[in-house]
Image (cartoon, rainbow, N blue to C red; front, top):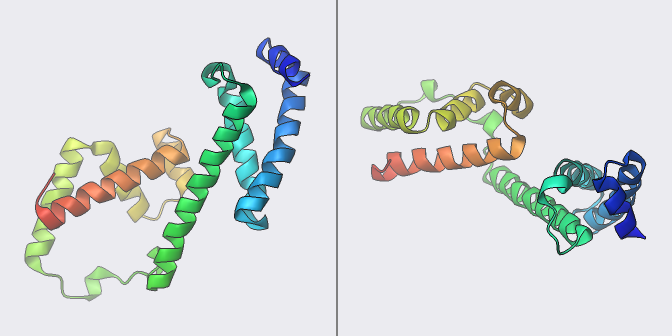
Length: 177
């Protein structure tokens, strides 16, 4: 029965596609609530459904639609848990990004400042998109604004931020590019 719906949806039947997504949303919501609690479960479930809807025509493996779809949900939950852990660590350390002190008020080591400027120039030269993402984040733009400006998806933004920060940190600490 379910396989017939999938076959119809792959042929362009919108009603079958809607029925599949309704079926998945209910199950995804239930599973997400069990894994992460009530607060963000609906958002994670909807995000997973949207990803399934966008990609099932091109990325579905022959092993089976449901296994692939639940894999998408697992990845979404994993990403959420990982970002929640990062937020928890930031909150535990007592320094949130919005509450970080203004560096202009403190004395900054001139050698460190020069090393940081050199590393930023190296990053701009080698990986301009990473540097742009870091700059836009530093300037206070929201995720959606940055994604719209750069025409990327939020997950890509987070990857670029993570890589750019690690490159900058390595350069400043060890002199690596």
